[in-house]
Image 1: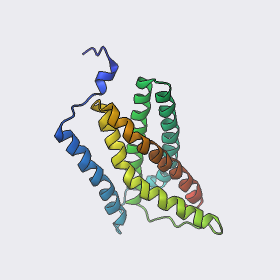
Image 2: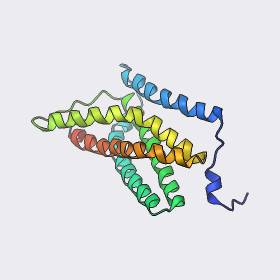
Image 3: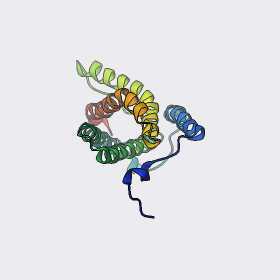
Image 4: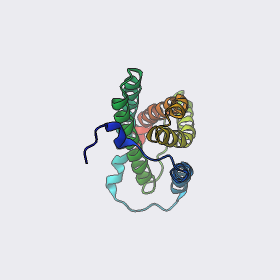
Length: 185
């Protein structure tokens, strides 16, 4: 199949069913992550999972850069490049989620050992990161849905909130990682 307009390859139908899928995923993903983190018995996935926090740091850092590049692309009215960057950011976020869950279902939580001003700084960053990461799932999924269903005005209105929150979550993910990295065993 030859696609004359690359934008058409990204389109999906704006149907109630597709919208319902986005709404369900917006709820299921954060709830599933919370439930998996609450599991006390850890699955024996192997020692290879010890590297996952470092992978997560790289994924978050890369996602932050890609988000900024996507923002620059859209400000320069390069919609095609913007879509590619946002697609990569979404894939990186998805990989992060799989890696994060894999680590936390197979390893005990790491205790932060910092003292002094680092301790409250770490917990403020961690709390805000976790809280906003829960909400950003819906914002990102809806923003992508609006883009893929050619609801451009709805997409523009939503990304005014989704983009800064997603960027904040990605950047604070890196900062939280850098602060706790010395305490990984």
